[in-house]
Image 1 (cartoon, rainbow, N blue to C red):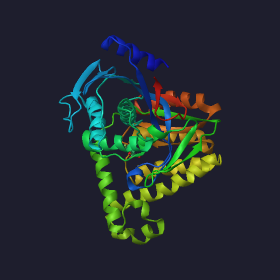
Image 2 (cartoon, rainbow, N blue to C red; image 1 turned 180 degrees about the vertical axis):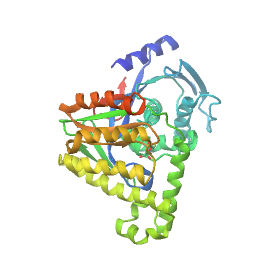
Image 3 (cartoon, rainbow, N blue to C red; image 1 turned 120 degrees about the vertical axis):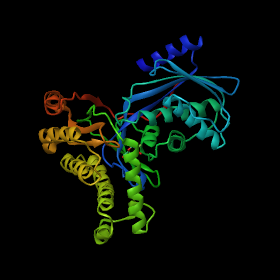
Image 4 (spheres, rainbow, N blue to C red; image 1 turned 30 degrees about the horizontal axis):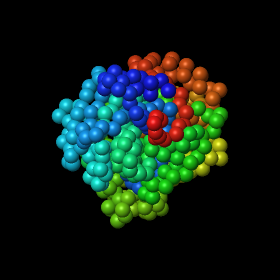
Length: 384
Ligand code: GAF
C-alpha cells in the first residue's frame, strides 16, 4: 500500500526510528438516506477505497507528538491530561486531541505516542475525511493502550469528539461506516439501534463519485439549522425523532407545521422509506427501482430539504438523462456543494466520464473530479 509506505517513511525521517504500528480507516459515500441519521432513521453508505493512515509508536510517558503530512508537515504536541485544550491554530490537530479527550472522558487510560498521519480521502468534499481520521485515531489510541474498543464504540467516540471538541453537530453515519464498512457491500444502518445489514453491491455496477468542485459554504450553520428544524417537527408530533412519524401521520397533520419545517420533515420521512426500499432493491438487483428512488431522493434534497446547488443539480440531470433507468444518481453527503454518487453499469463508466468531462465545464464553467470506487472494508490495524 503506497500510502502506508509514505507515512512510514515520513515517520522514520521525522522521529529517527521506525513506526511500530499502523492503522487505516476509510472515507465513505452514501448511496441514499441523507440527513436521516440524526433523525434516528436509515442510511445506506459504503466505505470507499480511500483511507486515512496513522503510523504510531508508543512512548513511556504521557506525551503525544503528531506529524501531519498533508498539512506541510505541521506538528502538534500535548500531554494526555483530561481535559485537553483546543489547538490555538490548527483545526486538524483538534481531531487528534478531540478523539483522545473523548476517550479519556470515558475513563480510558491512554499511553503517550509518536504519530504520523496522512490520507488520500479528498478533503472538504463530503466524503468523510474527518470521520476516517477520528476512527483511525480511536483505533490507534485504544490499541496502544491495550484496551478493547468495539467498532461501534469507536464510531460513537469519534462522533462525540466531533460534536463536543471540534464543534460540528453531525450524526453517526460517517464514523459508523468508516469503522464497520464491509468490502463489496453497502450497509443499511438503523441509526437508532446502530444495527446494520450488509447489502452486496452488484459486481456489474460501478460506484462513481463525481466531485462538483463547488466550494462548500455555510455548511455547518445550514446543517445545524436543518437539525433544529427536524427537532422542531418531531416535538410538534410529540415523538423523540422524525423516525417515529409515519407518512399517514405526517399527511394528516402537516398543515399545523410552519411550511418550511413541514418541507424538512417531509424530506426525512420520505427519505427513510426510500432508503429501506433502496436496500431491498439493491439486494434484489432491481436497478430500475433503485434508479427511481435515487432520483426521488435528489429531488427531495433539492426541493424539500433545500441543500443542493445548481452545479450539483446540473450533474445529476446530465448523468440521470444519460443513464435512464439503467443506473442511479443523486447528490451524496451533507450538501451545499460536494459530490454526486452514481451507480453505473460497468460498461458505461467511460461514457459517463466523457459526458461529464464534456458537458459539466460547458454548463457551469467548473471541472469535475471523477473517482470510480470500490466498496471497502472498515478500519483495521495494518502493521504490527
Ligand atoms: C454529514 C454528517 F456528518 C452525517 O452525520 C450526515 O448527517 C450527513 O451529513 C447527511 O446525511 O456527512
